[in-house]
Amino acid sequence: MNKPLFPDVIVNGHVIPSADIAAEAQNHNAPKGKPGLAWRAAARALVIRSLLLQEAQRLELTSDPQEIGPGKFETDDEALIRQVMEIAISPDTPDEATLRRIYDETPDRFRAPSIYEPAHILLSGDDAEAIAPKLIAQITQTPKAFGQLAAEHSICSSRENGGRLGQIVTGDTVAEFEAAMDAMDADTLCPTPVKTRYGLHILRLDAKERGAILPYDTARATISEALEKAAWTHAARAFVDALVAAADISGIDLTPS
Image (cartoon, rainbow, N blue to C red; front, top):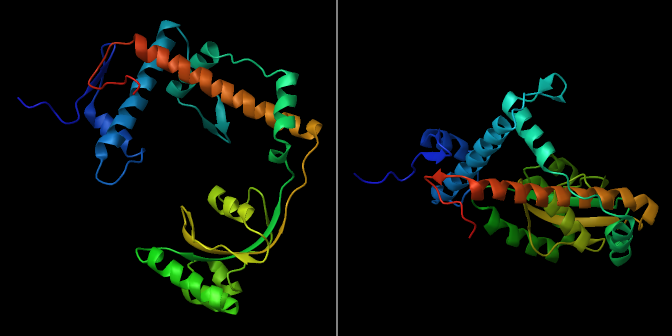
């Protein structure tokens, strides 16, 4: 009998059906034509979930769901997993000397919000990558054509205003768009299209006022929070890896590459 392409996975005797893994795989991105990568990511996620719930059972925990939104509570499984992680993970709190050192080494990272005045032409569809360079060349040759081209080509409602988005601040837009603006000078056109989940943007930056560097006392809480999150993530990964290493798992090889 041929070995199934996507078999069931067994975790310490608990069977995770391949159908459940296939359903979970819909939540994991993979390159086109490589469904095996999504299946593997889904299988790993369900294996980890199973191991954490088994750990909750070993610890004889009782589910204590918490409210995670107005009128919305954790499921019993979500609550048990959270409780396991709270018991297992207690990362160190960064000391004052570490916080100060990070600030002194890279003060430029800690700034008040910057203010931008961008305009864009948002393109989408199969022909976007072919059209974008042509429009950039046309605008470079005739800058005043930007507004008309926005009206003709942009799929964003800003096309009614010549592509102008008004005044926005740090955090108002997606990371790729903001990074492009940070790299530009005011009153310039980005020489290449900016790709985001919305499509391709032909970006013009009309004005920019970079935020001032924050004093240490103001930046301290941000630095501490970032270090605590990183420490928690590292500790959580180590805890999960230890559970995987100690488990009897068949149907998938989760040995780190």
